[in-house]
Image 1 (cartoon, rainbow, N blue to C red):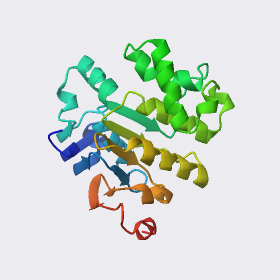
Image 2: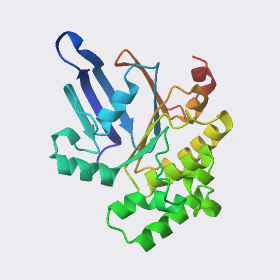
Image 3: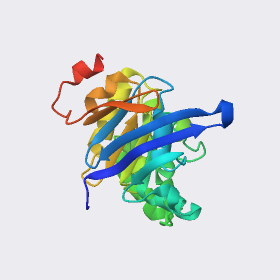
Amino acid sequence: MLSDIAVQCRGVQKAFGNGGGKVLALRGVDLDVSYGAMTLLVGPSGCGKTTLLSVIAGLLNTTGGEVTVLGEQIERLPGSQQILFRRKNLGFLFQEYNLLPALTAAENGALPLLAAGVSRRNAIKEAKRLLDSLGMGDRADALPKQLSGGQQQRVALARALIHKPSLLVCDEPTAALDADTGHVVMELLAAEAVRPERAVLVVTHDNRIFGFADTIARMDDGRIVNVESDLRNGNHAALAAD
């Protein structure tokens, strides 16, 4: 690893629409996301958090500025290479679990490996191992409808981590969960996802989870307005009260 920075945004802009209907969602964002840490991107609804996350993940192209992810400017890659880059290097965890209802927990968790050409036997075996580490070993053969919201989010976390991504992006992962369940999911995310070789970026407006952050970047009106770093031993209670 040549740098401790996994994601670097410089002067990033994103506009939607044209002419008089043009809306500038990102207005010159500068942000660094480090390996080995959990970075929370926080701010009021409509401030541009999810747009920035989508740009970083290569799901949206920028209007201006530069985004470098794991040493690559994704939007400059040909379309097929963008897909392969995301499949290999990125993991996604969202508020909506997006589990396939006809598949078991293990089968849902194994999907990224199956898409990468890993044999079904080995993919399911690895999914069950990972589910066991997330406290879901006894529910590996259950269908999503047989699982609670917190259990479904654990399956989604297993699916996001199973291919060992270098960047995990999470969009409001606790928004659909009660406080206790959300806390458990964040504990698992911190324990299982944060690694020296991986960066974790979480978009949230849930101040109940601020205490899990190493860095908190605050957005407002399409800009990063403040960054608090090295929070592992800091005063998260004060941050949550802001």
